[in-house]
Amino acid sequence: MKFIFFIFFFCFTSVLAQESKDSITQQLFEKVVYTLANDSLKGRATGSTEEYKSLAFIDEQFQLLAHKHLSKHAFLINVADSTQLTAVNGYYFLNNRAKNTVILSAHYDHIGLGGPLSMSKKTDVVHNGADDNASGVALLLGLSDFLIHQKKANVNYLIVFYSGHEIGLFGSEAFAGFVEQKKRKFKSVSSVVNFDMVGRLSPDLKKLKCMCSPTTDSILKTVNPSPFGFTLNITDEAKLNQLDTKVFYNKHIPCVSFTTGMHNDYHATSDDPQYINYKGMVAIYNYLCQLILKLGASPN
Image (tube, rainbow, N blue to C red; front, side, top):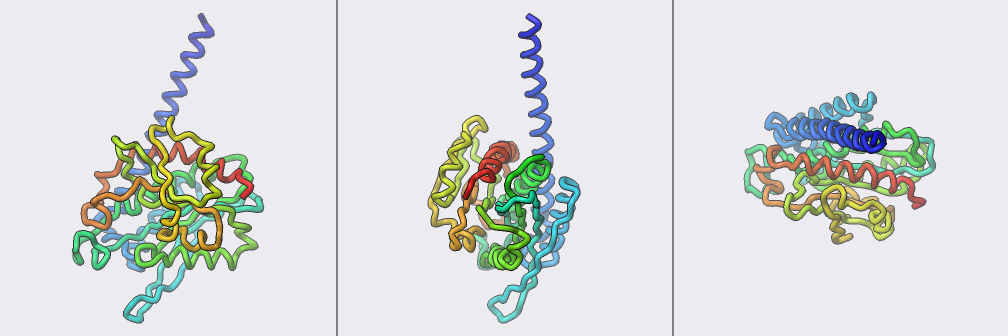
């Protein structure tokens, strides 16, 4: 009888501990999304003062979680009217003294006040980009905290927050060149995991979409998403050419990008924080904590 009581007590306390952990994770996600998608940041347009403020906030949160600052990678973008923008990627290299490195990425810029990219046909209204891609930034911050506190890892992690995504994938392209220049420091990139619009997990469909290189397909099958409350929908590999995975995918580096999919608020003035499924993001986070460790253990 005492043994049965012990098992019950252990299971009960484990459930409470998980619920407490999930609650803390959800609070982080809500804080990040509501801050980045606040009107005061004016849609985080590439190279804007508000985008710089956004990266400063991301750095602040990273420091609170990991007790480390992000490094900055500045680059120039030539825009259509022959002027230049200065944009900045933020990154952190988690050096586990391994020979291979996994890149984890999310872009933090959005489309500012609209313009040609606006689905609302607006040029003077803030497009907050809560799902696109404050949700991806929040998820990456949570995963960074998880990975930095892992005691054993046989792979390095290069965590990067891209600018310049919305106007042409400039941030990831510039960063790939930077990684190549610093390959003695960053080691061999074995795979890339990207997060772009991960905040709208449908309570009805319960599907996490994934675009992946063929070589990562077998790894995805090692973690069953069903216990986390959703299924995995592997979609068109060619879409990796439309995301921040493009430059790495074309170098034949295994890539995978996660999303909860498109919706009517994409690039619209209505992509706001109150429409994010934060509990769904926590479920995705818990799944990815297991999957990324499997990816890191891959010999690729």
